[in-house]
Image (cartoon, rainbow, N blue to C red; front, side, top):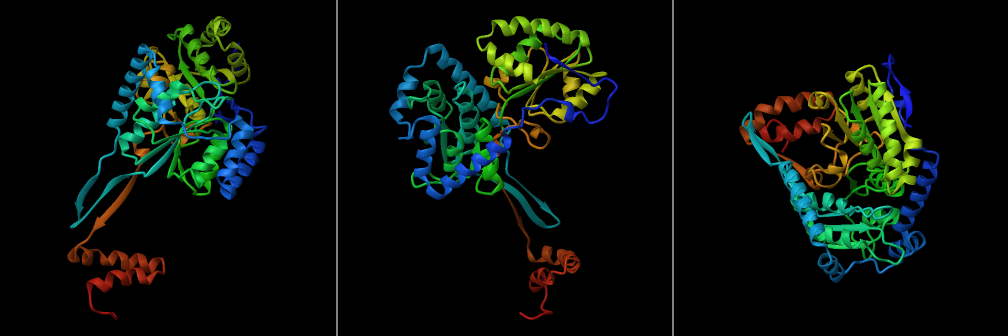
Length: 433
């Protein structure tokens, strides 16, 4: 049974009452990641080999050969290949629509605008631990290639025998290909990509989801301005806003689908209908018992599953915004109306026939999404994340003279008179030079 969080009649900030993964071990993770990153920065390849051997049991060689990828593609079942190609096509179409366009325009006689420059080199993290996330290869490589990134490097943790999931390798090729695939994961992979070693080039940005160590490592290298990252994209979470029209079986299936990812996954039902919560509990009992990964799912739901009872759907939106879920489903009588009110979510799945699992694989929007409340300030991965905007402006003499009074005034306010002088030196002959 989902735990109950009764917020009816309580319209204060609910954030502290909503479940999040236990942070008891966060300090230890933070410290260990800092050690690994510092070691990789100091000793390069030797440190990467040492940590990879200790953690994954594989100390190199890290490069996956083209022949391995060829074999993976050749070995694909026909139906699987068709499904992957369909997913790639759908994701490519969606991300093409969102590709930002350069612009320029005149303003007061000057001309200015923005152009977009592809990043030179990016690293894509593709999880391969509890499940080989084939879909992440698609979600990271497709927008990188659409943006025109010069070099795409994929890192994915190996199995104990050093192998990489053939499905991940095949998906990498079908998504547009990687210039390099490394059987490498964890903080050591992030460190190698961020700092560079003698054999692994430094990247401009690291994207893709990961577990606690990868997520922490990404945030640490970003905080040091060593390299850019997309967002904190860690342990998965789902919230479902539902009313009395929702099908309990659908809601239960969607909660189970996300809990299947990780025993620390968070799964919330937010509803004004206490009866629905009871009906979902009954459906969950059946779905969890029948699931292949029932133990993992049960662990997640017992720890971080909850039915949040609210006054009405407006209150449900307030609670959903406070939680800022990675995935938010809306299963209500007027789902689009409710979804349009939501401000904070990584991605919104509108209507009872739009489950999160569709978005995980092939709906089109990216499944690399902010977690742990980061959807309050950042969105999902986009083509624009692989492009660097460059603003530009051009003034002619007449336009510069008309604007000089502004730099005079603001330069005086900030006590930076040389700023004004740099303009006046071009507009008159009153001063030296």
